[in-house]
Image (cartoon, rainbow, N blue to C red; front, side, top):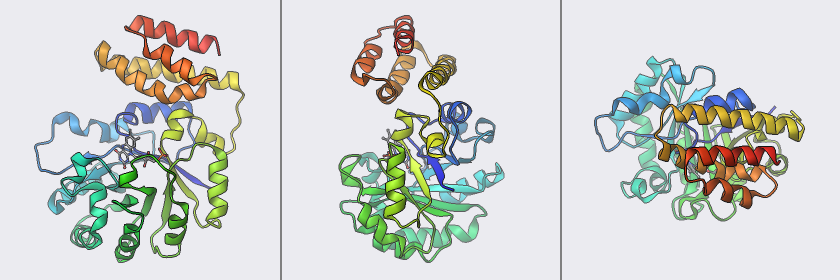
Length: 312
Ligand SMILES: Cc1cc2nc3c(=O)[nH]c(=O)nc-3n(C[C@H](O)[C@H](O)[C@H](O)COP(=O)(O)O)c2cc1C
C-alpha cells in the first residue's frame, strides 16, 4: 500500500484547503503545512499559529513544517507542537527563494551538510517529537544530497522527503530520477519521493524504476490540478459527472470559507490562483482560466464559475 502526502504549497494548502480536500476528495495520509519561518527572531503575530493549531487540523493527519536554523527557536517550536499533541514536525531544507536562501536558510543549507548535522545534534536530544525533513537534491547542483544523506544517517529521522530537483531549477526541468535512485541505497532513514507527480502512471513508473523500494510519494501541484488524484491512485474510480458535482461542492465551500475571511479583492485573487490549477480539470483549461480571470467582481466571478460547471 502506498502512502500519499499533500505537499506544502504556500498560498494554497492552508488549513481551509487541507480540511476541505480531506472532506471532498481524501486519499491523503499526511497533510503538511506551508512553512513557518522562525528566523530571524521576531515576535510571532497572534495569527501566525492559526494555520497550525490542532483545532484547525483535527480531522486530518497533520504535520507542521518549519524553516530556520536557530537552535533555540527550533527547540521552542518543537516543544510547542509537542504540547499540542503533534508527533512529528517537518524541517524545510528545500525552499529555493532568495528571500530565504540569502539568509543561508532553506535549500541554501544543503551546501553545508555538517551544519545540518550540528543543528540536529543540538536539537534532537532536547525534543520529544520526531523530525522529518523535506529537501531538494542540492542548491546549485544535484549532488549536495549525497553529503546530506551521509550526515543524516547519523540520526533517526521520521523520514526524508526529497523533491528531486536542485534549488536553481525552481520548478522547471524534469526531476532527476537517477540521482534519487542512487540515494535509496545510501539512506538509513526512510525516503519519500516528490516532484511532478501528475497522474497515476507517474507513480507506476516511479515504483518500477525504484524497484518497489519507495512506497511514499508527496504530491503538490498535481493535487491542485486534480484533487481526486490521491484517491484515484488508491483505486477509487468515479465517473466524470459525479466528479464535477463533488468539485463544485468543494469550490462552493472553499468560496464560503474564504468569503468569511477575506475582503472581495483578496477573495478573488485567492480563488483565481486556485483556478490557475483547477482549470486543468476542464476540457479547455486556457479558456476556462481566462473566463474566471477576467471576472472583475465577486458576482461576475460566481456567474463565470456556474457557467464553467454547467457547460462541462
Ligand atoms: C506555490 C508553491 C508554494 C510552495 N510552498 C512550499 C512550502 O511552504 N514548503 C515546502 O516545503 N515546499 C513548498 N513548495 C514546494 C512543494 O511542496 C513541492 O516540493 C514542489 O511543488 C514539487 O512537487 P510537485 O511537483 O508535486 O508540485 C511550494 C511550491 C509551490 C509551487
